[in-house]
Image 1: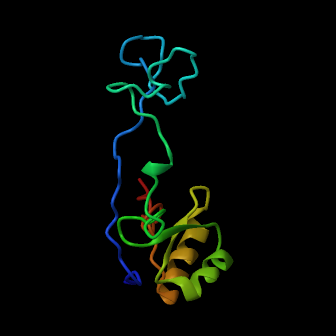
Image 2: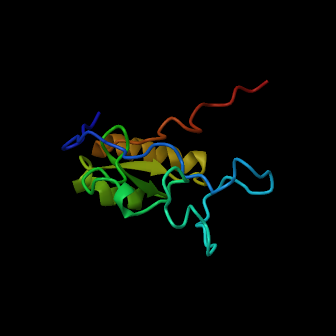
Amino acid sequence: MPVPLVKHKIVKKKTNRFLRNQSDRKVTVPTSWRRPKGIDSRARRKFKGTTLMPNIGYGSNKKTRHTLPNGFKKFLVHNVSELEMLMMHNRVFCAEVAHNVSTLKRKSIVERASQLNIALTNGAARLRSQESE
């Protein structure tokens, strides 16, 4: 099992989502974030006690950005030749087999990943054999 080269502690500045202004008051306003654009909007003018707006200060640390909890960064793989690109980067990136890869190709990808010592996030997916009834 490969281990990451360095494992930084991942710190999120804000874990809950930004909610749309007045989405808690009106049923017709969905919760998905939209920037308030009204000329008299209290949220746009950033009054105290109003909805928080996303800005660049909430960004993640550059060292831990896109890092999974296991310490690797994710790389999407469709075939064995794409997996071979990670040969020299197996301590930084882990592979994830794409959702539309068949079981036959998936088996060969999982086998080659174990040879190259590359971590797979979904290595056990679609590999269990179906019992015939």
